[in-house]
Amino acid sequence: MNKIFPAIKMALRSMNANKTRTFLTVLGVMIGIASIIIVYSAGEGIRSLMVGQMEAFGTNIIETEIKVPTAKKGTSGDTESAMALASGVQVTTLNGEDLKDINKIPNIVGGYGAVMAQEKVTFKNESRAASLFGVSATYLDIDKSKMASGFFFSAEDDQALSQSAVLGSKIKETLFGDSDPLGQYITIRKARFRVIGVMASRGATMGMDLDDYVYVPVRTLQQKIMVIDYFMYMIHQFQDPKLAADTAEEIKRVVRDNHDITDPAKDDFRVTTMEEMMKMLDTITNALTWLLLAIVAISLIVGGVGILNIMYVIVSERTLEIGLRKAVGANYSHIMTQFLVEAVLITLLGAVIGVILGVIVSKLIAVGAGFAGLTWEFRIPLKAFVVSISFAFLFGIFFGVYPAKKAAQMNPIDALRKE
Image (cartoon, rainbow, N blue to C red):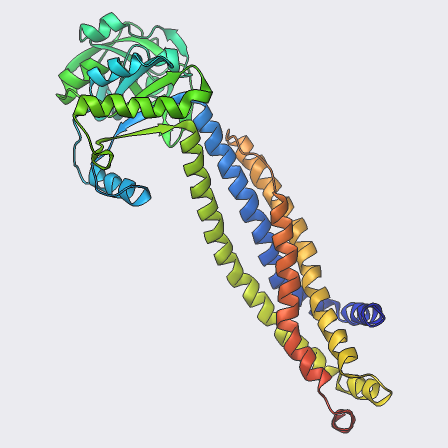
């Protein structure tokens, strides 16, 4: 400690005497540390946004969706399935019988099947491409969507292949403007659909703009537009959250029995609970955070190289001082400590300013997201500060030790003669 405090005082005097140089030195570190804070805060914000959007669908739901059978399990198999579906492979085995049988599971309180399509929707001279969302009549019993006007179609409409339609608020504005669409007819692939309701505005959720959808009875969309007899996915609501995992396993058993599947690796469906969705979300956000931190590390290395160069300049400028101090009794460790402390103080100064800057920018991002209508939580985890200060301290030592060592190894006679 007898060496540290004097070294700190000398380092502070040196930094104060060269304010501009000190600022330029800490600038790279400051930007890197601020980026660390912003990355961690953005990760929390993205997570809160995604969690909010998931919760908009309800926390007590289980999704059963089509999947291309693969021999692999886990992420690689899921990726292979997703690529196969994207390339046009069709899985046609998820059907109404599966929906009914899953509804009989004791912990299940209801469910709906769904299919989606893209078609041109026309009203008089107005037309546009729109997403058609075919769902069972029980959709509103599970989903949190609300009606703005009119009513949703019934189970009888679905069974009768009724050509009824419910419009999302955005597509209603596009086709009808301020006029009342109820009772009017829109055209979907030459078929006339009667508008019976308009959904309340809900915004984009999980990358889907639900306000831009046209809702129609699922059987109508299947048989009159798409000419299919299967679902793309099913959503079921369960009663007891503690039994979510057991319920998911029971759903798998039911669907495997229906599809004559004996090997789970050959499943043509995937069952996902909200808890599993949250785990996948955590995996994605953590991977994204580490990727961004790897990029940020590059800017910190650039800042560290700047410290290395500046410390060389400082050592060169203070050669006489080093020679004099050694001549009056300062040893290797005194000189080493002096310059190493100065390097660490410079990086810590950059870290403190960077943390403050990062917090301010993160707060501004959260405020901006709030104005944009996003559920963006402003939160900076403690580990962001720990990582920031640790990085600064370690970088100060790593990039300061060589110049400090060079200063400490100077021969006092050579140092004095050089001046």
